[in-house]
Image 1 (cartoon, one colour):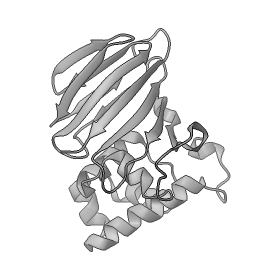
Image 2: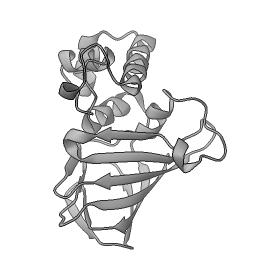
Image 3: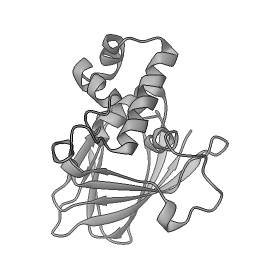
Amino acid sequence: MKHDEREPSAPDPVDVRLGARLAELRGERGWSLGELAERSGVSRSTLSRAERAETSPTASLLNRLCAVYGRTMSQLLSEVEAEPEPVVRAADQPVWEDRAAGFVRRSVSPPHGGLRGELVEGRLAAGADIAYDRPPVAGLEQHIWVLEGALTVTDRDTDHHLGAGDCLRLRVWGPTRFRCPGPGAVRYALAVVRP
């Protein structure tokens, strides 16, 4: 739900836990909001609002923070959930949504501290366009398998146009961008392997 649609006194519980975890990570490093702003390229006010759950963080914001903290987005999101079980039922798979960007992310196999891989389902609305200025972890291996629709993935300066059934394998070293050209939404599986 968009921040402006919620009552100010009723922030989303996931945003509250996520904000607390972000504040904890910053505190563990002894950084001020100003230091984190310099490292991440995100304004102090935006960081403060995210930590206090006054706003729901966007995918791009979380990606920048993950890069600073050396985590994948799934790792960060899993840290605000309970320890994952070996079998994760569909109804129990954590879902995170960036409504403003038209992006829904389901952690199909939430990450575990002893494992390097994870599986994510992504859904982008027609016309959605999400840009990441850096990988959350340099050299991250990704396998992007389009299940329905069409997806354009830009890895640095190279565009990859994918249709249903196509799979792109890459190691992420620089900026990436995910776009759904339409006419309908796209649904894809993303296998992520930490280096």
